[in-house]
Image 1 (tube, protein in one colour):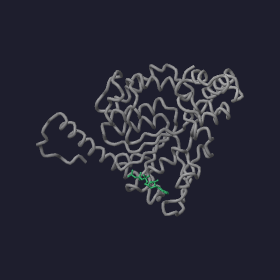
Image 2 (tube, rainbow, N blue to C red):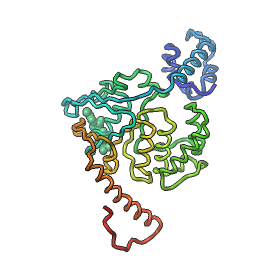
Image 3 (cartoon, helix red, strand yellow):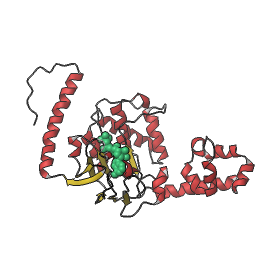
Image 4 (tube, rainbow, N blue to C red):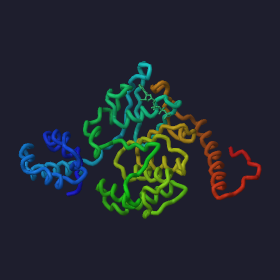
Length: 329
Ligand SMILES: Nc1ncnc2c1ncn2[C@@H]1O[C@H](COP(=O)(O)OP(=O)(O)OP(=O)(O)O)[C@@H](O)[C@H]1O
């Protein structure tokens, strides 16, 4: 039996869960349930009131149920306002539907990451903002808040570092097999090919994940979140410019019918969303629907961006930029 999730074991038996909370490492999710049970000894198992095979049966049944249940289809995520940093009520009830991109803008320190964190933990009035998050118009079931294998929300943060010594192919294949997808190898290949389409500097499946650049790591995580992660909600804390094709990354996520929220200072991203939330003093101060004029301006900004990207590429290749530049808009 492969490594088992701690959440499954705790749900299997409350007394085992309570016991685990005081048990030193390694835990069953680190070494596998059978090896862990072997280390416990008959006396401890007798104290728990369950035989070794009863615990194994319980956990296997729960894992089977988890597999059959699959990810919960999420049609809508609702943010119910709480209070801002000054304690004033946040008069907001905002519903975001599958396939929608919503951007979060606001000055540094205004509370953009806090809003993402509230969504990430599916807050129920238990964070500093007092916000509540509903899934399909109802409070989320507790399992989806706390059990890692049932998480509805995937978050891509600004800095990501790998600490495992695996190749890209091994890493993605391992995630695919954890997700129990059919044809794990084919899906893993697709994730890597997609990541390479998002980044300027392509990488081989045989390269170690620790050798990927910031942009390549980001691209791999976006492709992974879109194609492999079962989480229907994706939160992005600023896709910085570092070598990732931001438009394609967003198209990819939306095509998979994810709910995407992006905190950003980048005009190209801020105007890509259908709506944007303006954060002031820790509260959602305004919800702006992107207008037709703004969409037209986005096209002009994309031309400016393409012009800049071209100059950047030329400088990278060691070229000179001596010619008088035309305005790109
Ligand atoms: N409604 C609120 N009530 C209490 N504290 C809040 C609230 N909103 C935000 N904060 C706190 O304010 C601080 C700054 O917020 P946050 O880090 O989310 O800002 P930010 O907009 O993401 O900044 P940056 O653009 O620099 O990343 C954090 O400590 C956060 O917990």
